[in-house]
Length: 249
Image 1 (tube, rainbow, N blue to C red):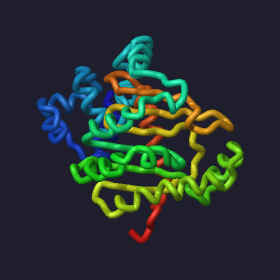
Image 2 (tube, helix red, strand yellow):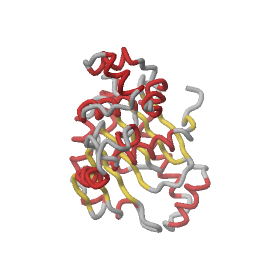
Image 3 (tube, rainbow, N blue to C red):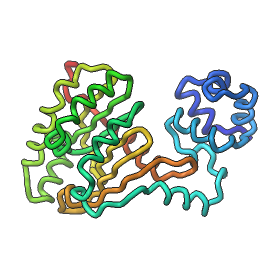
Image 4 (cartoon, rainbow, N blue to C red):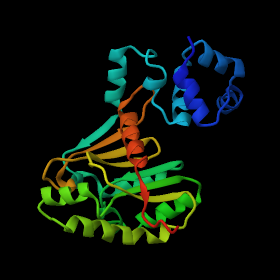
């Protein structure tokens, strides 16, 4: 049976068996067997392919790992759990950003604490974008229904929208840079997500509680795990509902 998920993923990215083989350093016929005969690649190739296609290994090859082993790998993706955002070492945010070379993604309502307390945050984002990294920043729509509800839940009302606008003021200098996308979203924010290539900080949310007082997961992607990729998928679904912050640009 053919691997239709792999075939579809390759088509979306404009990859043929020959071009994918060239990226991986394997024979094109090997890639053709992965697609047409549903052969499972070796783990090192599965990881690379999943990264190229922006899909999880468990989605592309659901039978590649026994269920229990897949669970164990996913658990190993958790580097650390912090009881609240304030317990995250202040320099960890900047360290992860500086290590990133391919992709930086931020999904928040405001996230004002990052540019407000880290003077290197915005200049480093600029450096990453100019160096070729894709930077995608998703902020809550100040006029959105879910943002208003979140403000009411936390007892701060319209201050939530003001915090978003204050945060965006820091990012104006990035608006015309290549590889930078700055967007609004109006979705329920189940988690704030901060992605730096294959590492991620996930600020979980608690009803009626400011994000600063909610737990944070530090995740690192592992081949065969699907916890990291589950949050990537969530980020991408919100990205699909985006609208430009500055539409004239």
